[in-house]
Length: 531
Image: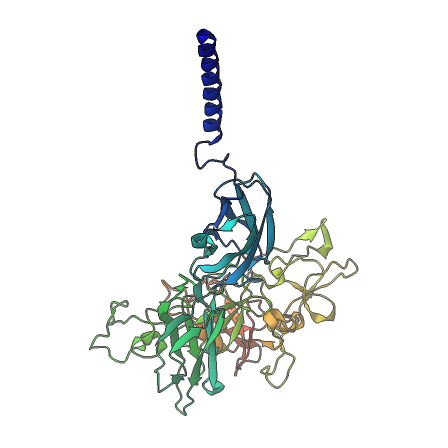
């Protein structure tokens, strides 16, 4: 009987041990994904701070704001949330709506999705908050009931740029405006101090209305105003160099666009010679005026004051390139149709590359038609012609024709008297193009936006000659006047006074003004404005 009792007690002890082991195993290992809430210990919900780069203008991207639970819930959890703008604006910097989400039972992770909108504005980082407002079947962590979301700025500092490089104005213009642009919107105020230099004197020749350029946040365009002072003193052109210093919240663009030049056109009309060197009668490239030879050209004029300024022409010269539609171009442009002399106000055509006129298919009557502006090629020559008896010096010149020869360097005149090229096989005669027909064609096509082209006076041709060029050539800067020739004379509108068959020419090779026969073909360049 005792033995049986002992055996029963052993069985009971074994069963109780197994039960105890099962109870201990059900308690789990603490805070892991298998932990499940009970009505007595609800899950605790927290929301986490996060950040994201804003991206570029026009782009949007999704941001998931993480939510965590202290443990799994045996029931679905309903969580309410809302948004609060700090510096970021809902609907502009991000898009989100207050609402509710359901966290399924057994989950320990959730997220709230918002849409972040990019821009190109340099600005401070922007912030908004997400608040957890209400919850069922769980509790909200008091310390982590809201999250701060940071939209990180990823845009570089904008650059300040002068919209144009150079402009000219007369003394009576009143106010000159110099446009300045910011490369992109900024979230900061941008300021810069205006710095002025040049041959024109502040207070005597002009005044500055505001000494500071100020861009409020979001602005990208401002103007600097200069009031030009008119005086009765005959004088040459003067320059104002405008730059920016002490720039805040922006950078100044490097190279072209970092400065602007205003040329106040003079009253005396023509350019200086370009001479900045002196001679003692033997040596001609001295950098100082010898006492034995006083009063030399290099001691006077704009080229003395601007000897070191060669951005837009040598010394006192100042030129601006112009396209065929009349728009100004940077000095570095490789294709341009005209050149404005900022000192005299004259606008010159820029001769085009050489072109050889060829017969087409071996037919004398049919000429090759060049493309673009080739009819203004630098190698073409012209006869002097002016039908106006009031200023042709007593002779209109000649309009020569031929039936047997095909010129290699002379465009022909087609119907209506315009210079150009013909494909008319029925036309047996070729009427060579003359200076008057050339001007007519320049005005017909509206070259560089003008229709008041004319032949230049002899003094005007001299005004663009640079007499400090090496050796014997006086061709102005090739950077502005391409394809001018040094081996030919350039016809002027000025007839000879004692010989009706002659007109004055200028030779860019030796710098001489000389008489040329009206019937001899010479080079020609058109000019307009300020006769």
